[in-house]
View 1: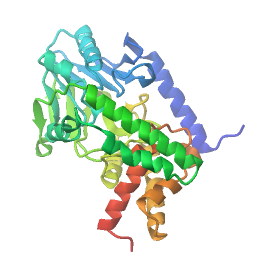
View 2 (view 1 turned 120 degrees about the vertical axis):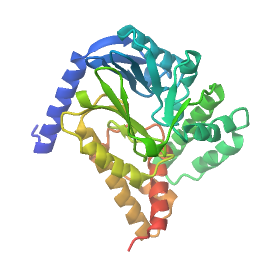
View 3 (view 1 turned 90 degrees about the horizontal axis):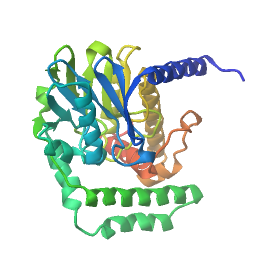
View 4 (view 1 turned 135 degrees about the horizontal axis):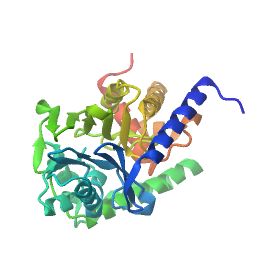
Length: 348
């Protein structure tokens, strides 16, 4: 088999990243997530949702001499409990707080554990209101009216592939409502205003920098550890997977990816999902966004609607191994965002 230059480069990069992760010291392994040291006092929690819903998203611990910062609220209190356990294993210093990178359920539903331990919960100032609007307001009510349109869509599918996508969409929405119904919500205790970000937190010997970069949602935060060229990227970065776009502004998200892609090549990213990765993974996601954006513009020129644009999108071969929970969560929602922006700024 012959490889072109790009394939050779990606294979080499992947090998180096795998070697780095294998060489990382494993602190805790609970099956549903593994906590490993990436640098002195800096830990990544990598979730494996196939083994349980406790985490679902990645996170981690940043431990200095004087304080510890936790990243992510996770899906369930057990996920947050894992982060607290890790923090107390690596340091006797107090826990300064836990950062929710955005309001989505797999990054905030575990907050209850932090609240139980009186650990401050830091998040964008709009996270509380969005959690109330999207989750608290939906608890204890019938979800049948919300699911009915998705059941109808299956009957209206245009072909076998579309039927498969729509069946997966229905299951994804059922899963989401089940998670909402079973959660006990705990809200952030420290609301971070974008005007006051970035925020530097000196933990003693290591500084964590919290930044705001909207795109995946309007509440996205990243946590940088500049001394070690590490970035907890939240769901602004899905490593080799189709990103969830339900609350996305795709054009702003693309600008956020440009920012992340500007970091040095040695930078390691803890993405919202999947393995620790490098800058090349950011560029791959940007290329995926560019492909979807070009498809949306093509469909608009052809007079197709949002639903047709979603149905007609063909995943390029280079992204064929990218996973997704739901076509509508990803491609369908991306098309709606692109169409919305094109209505505001029509094609010339």
